View (cartoon, rainbow, N blue to C red):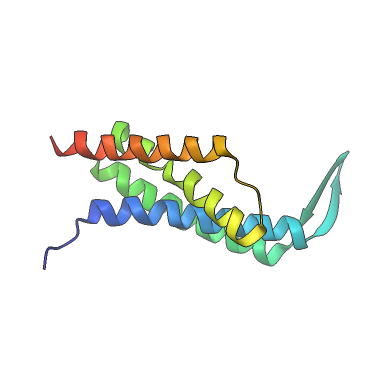
Length: 122
């Protein structure tokens, strides 16, 4: 059985962690208590909000590990897969619409990731 490279585990884990963080923030804004800061109103559920911060910290640590070992010009574009995951889970969990333009954009993101992966092998 072929061993999976740590690089691919890191690159897959980061968008998943970032997506979880964004889902938690969305839950926080939907279920939170309204607070007013100056003229700025915001709804926050602190349990979801703090959980999101924990995932952001984990993501930041993972991102630092990626930057320590791999080129920035290849690593950063791969984080765009987070957009695809968030759109999918926004649709699945929150019943948010996905337009034809969204789908086309996500296809381009995936094609770009595959091109970068192929270029990185050479």
